[in-house]
Amino acid sequence: MIILDIKDEKNQRQEFLEIADLIITPEILDKLIWKHNVTESEVRQVFLDKPRYRFIEKGRYMGEHLYLALGTTDAGRYLAVYFIYKKNKQALIITSRDMTENERRKYAKK
Image (cartoon, rainbow, N blue to C red; front, side, top):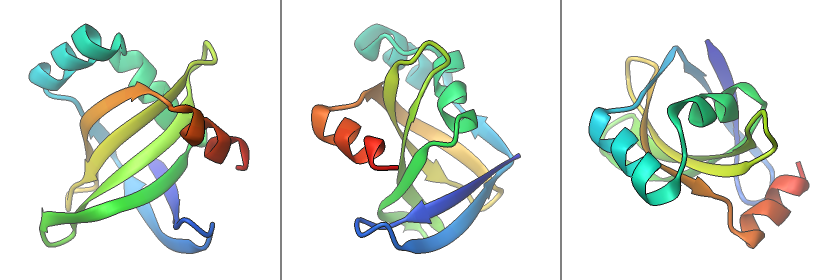
């Protein structure tokens, strides 16, 4: 179980989310590996290493919104992971990629 402390652009606390598990579909996993060279293990490492989280936008379904997690892997790789927080306390991974320079600066302010 992972507890997320979601903050806005001004670093103000917005909410807490509890994640029971990550969902990575085979199609998304293929894309992560092929397009971004990111493994499932690296995505999981980001969630376990106290990343910064940010609300991105409201989802199509009430209570299921898009969030961004910025964090590092065990090897020190800086990743951005986009996910939908589901009502059943699972995080559906949408994509993951290397952080941009701007994202790395924001992450460094953690």
